[in-house]
Amino acid sequence: MLIHQFITFGFACTPLYFVWEKVIGMHDTKSICLRALARLPVVIPIWFLAIIFPFFGPINSAVGALLVSFTVYIIPALAHMVTYRKPSARQNAAEKPPFFLPSWTAMYAVNAFVVVWVLVVGFGIGGWASLTNFIKQVDTFGLFAKCYQCPNPHPSPAPGPPQHLH
Image 1 (tube, rainbow, N blue to C red):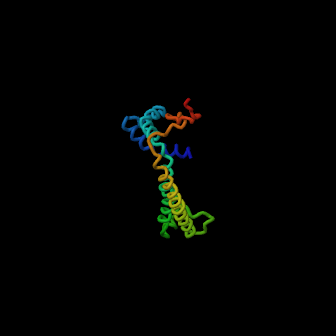
Image 2 (spheres, rainbow, N blue to C red):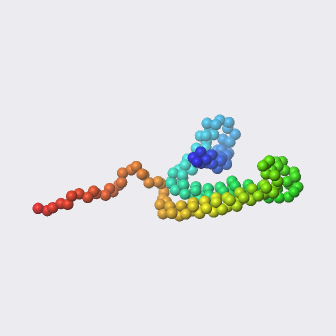
Image 3 (cartoon, rainbow, N blue to C red):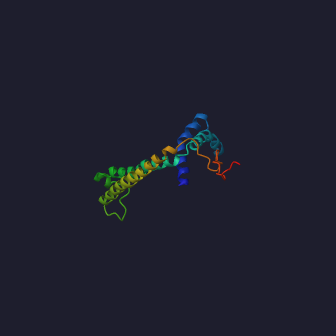
């Protein structure tokens, strides 16, 4: 899952890199090292914001359940169904249904199953679980993560033996 985050970060920041490189006049530079150095002013504030908000996990979970299921599964399946809804589009299709699906009707059935399944399981159950988790953790959110290895600033005194006055 960590590799996925790095790849997504790269894809999401690429337009920012291009705009920044054009602003500072480095867009046509062929040197990878110079372009990497030029991109640091874009990356460092984003990293700082990521460090400030330690509750990224619940947010990422909610976004994944609610948005990724649409963009990865539902929209492509619906787009395929809309694109090939007319017989002329199916006749002129560059790719026909795979050999294990005997007709376009079977292809529509598979696409409809994917849409319904992801709506129920991914968006419905996954969205409910991630939002429930988010709501349960919202009281613990704060800027910067707590130091888990630091000593307790106010240690509770250990109870000692009772003292007798003589």
